[in-house]
Length: 84
Length: 293
Image (cartoon, rainbow over the protein chains, first blue to last red):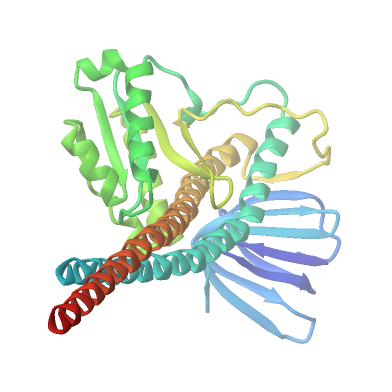
């Protein structure tokens, strides 16, 4: 699936990934390949990009934001993302 | 004669050094302008996606959506957020924004102004000074955003405005700033910030069976403040680019004018020099003639 992470200041990430873990408002969840269409609000917490299925990850701490999943394309909009 | 010569020479020198400054300022502004434009392009995808999400949700839900921040109420108290620059020497840039703000008050809110119910939040020092001089009640809390232009700082200002609106300290919030068109032209606009203009349903929106987490209404309530943050951020970035654009054009004009001035000064310098030489020659020739006679 394609992942795109956007902040107001720049494009943080763009590319093919295995999955992504996100801090939803009501709890942590994970989006993997071919996830159903979804719009969700994110809370404060850690966002983890799963680069492949061999535990290669990249983490960011975020203050909040939104995620949209549509046609195997995941767009994450975050404010105040810092590399963790 | 020699005195006049020296005077012109000094003026030429002073004009040249002024021209050097204006040329340097023009180049600095050009570099800053490019960076400011970059920042606008960087934030555009985020802003577009956010707007798209909102119109998607609104279009996919039946009936009218209830948005607290979009409720119109009688306008008693008005907040104007006026975005100017911290520094001058940018042509009529700051003066035009202040003029636009005063015009907006005169056109739409003269009744509220008479009752002293208009508050100005200034972003940028120049506007703050001008509005204060004009006798408006001003608040300087967010004056210095341009000293450190980050999303967090702008967000704080936007959230403070939303909070004041929710607490009914203001019934309407407007932005006065300059939209960036290109380096030479700015559009001075007054834009409604709160209440939020109604979101139109779009016929061509993506119809997909979205899972909403949390429910739509709550999602919209979460989205709205973020959209306001980006709206103010965009305005501030636009104003920043406009400022540098305006300064660049102003300094370009100034350098050009200095060139013109130098041209006329050089002509009068040469004329004075020629006159001095001629007088000297005449003196020598007549002196020699007197000796021979």
